[in-house]
Length: 397
Image (cartoon, rainbow, N blue to C red; front, side, top):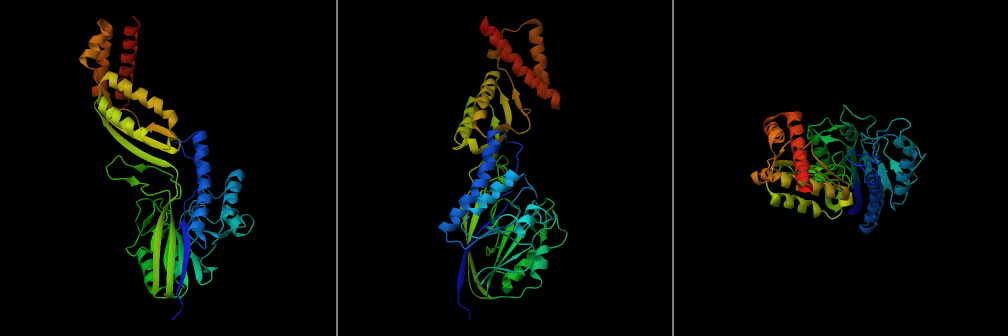
C-alpha cells in the first residue's frame, strides 16, 4: 500500500479581470476594477493562512483574450505577489488562441509566477500531485473536452486534480461554453482516475455531487445580481467565494476530499422588490437600503409596485434621490409604471384646483390608471409633476 499523502490548495475561477459593468460609472467602476485585482492579493493571503501548496484558476481569468496593456500589467503584477504557484486554465472568455493573453503567458512571455495548462497532458505540480486540464481553444466547444482529457488516463495512487470550464450536461439553460458528461466524470472519480474536479463557469460556489468531489468555486468577487425579488434567491446566490480543498489519498480507491468555502468578495449586488401602499411601507424600504454597510460597494436595482398618495409618492422619490449618490449604483428595475399615484381628497382639496386645471388633472389621473405602456408612464410622471407644481404654487401664495 502506498503511503498516505495530503495536499491542500485553493480553487478559484472567473475573475474576469477587465470586466466593465454598465451599471457602474466613474469612481464606482474604478473601485470595482481595483477590487477585482485586490482579491488576488487576498487569495494569496488565504493560501498562506491555510497552508496551500498552489492555487488553481479554473477558467475566465480575463474578461477577453486581450486587454489594455495597463489592465494586463496590473493583473500580472497582482499574480506575481501570490506566494504559491498559480495554475491557469483557459476558459470561454480567455481561450487559448494565438497571441492571446493565455498564449503569451503559457509561452513565458509574461507572468513568471504563472503556469497555463495548454493541453490535457498531466502536469506534476507537487510531489505525488498531478493536474489535468481541459482548456478551451475557442469560446465554445462542441465536443466534451473533459471526456477527451480523461480517455487515456488510468487509476493512479498519486493525487490527480481535474480542471475544467463549462457545465455538467444540460445543467444550465444558457448555451454553455462546454458540455461535460457527469457520468464520465463520476466514473473517473469512482475508479481513482481523478480525485477532485475544479470547475469554473458558474459564478456561485456549489458542489455538484453528493460526495462533494465536484465543485464550482464561484467568482472570488461578485459580478452580478443576487435576485431577491421573486421570493427564492436566484442568479448569483453564493458568489464572492473561493474554496480551500484538501485531498488525502493512500491508494487509487482510497481518496478523501474536504472543501471549505471562503468569503472573499467585498461587493454586494442585489435585486429587490417592494410593494408600497403607505408611508410605513416606504420607510421600511428605505430602512432596508440604509442597512447596507458598505454602500460604495453595493449595487441595487429595485422593482416597485403599489398605489401611493401624491404626498407619499413625492416623499418616496425624494428619499431615493438622496440615497442614490451614496451607493455604487441604485436604480429602478425597468421603470415606475407599476407604482401608481392616487391623490387623496384632502390633497386635492388643498390644491384648490378649478376649471381647466381640475379637468386636466382628472384626465391625467384617468390615463395613469387605464393607459397602457408609455402612455400610462407618461401620464403618471405628468400627474406627479402637476401635483408638485400645483402644490408649490399654492404654498408660494
